[in-house]
Length: 157
Ligand code: MG
Image: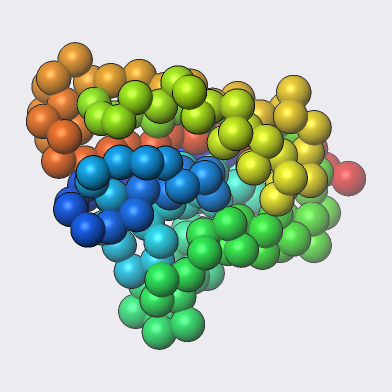
């Protein structure tokens, strides 16, 4: 068994889409980034690479590479899952946190789980997504950013 941890933060700005786990969420503010800025997908990818000691998302999908401009991060997540398999691992489960003061994410959690389960080819019971606010504290609480955290468990196959 191998455990991995991932973290990501993106700035919340006007005139950008808010995409988390491949699900577009209605919001006045969206996440700024080179790709679609899907912080949840990025945190999960980093947890997978971390568990397999394969480096990080920046090594595999550099944000200086024009190929990844406005990239769909779920395509990157699918590629990361393939790489994990090629390296002889099976994904057992993931657990994640999204920390956002706005918008309210609870109505979208089941859609996000289903989206991740589909792309990662896992049963939805193996995907946990939890959302919370930051109680008004720091940049997340002041609606300037959204943070995502992920842990995953891999098994040698
Ligand atoms: Mg990111």
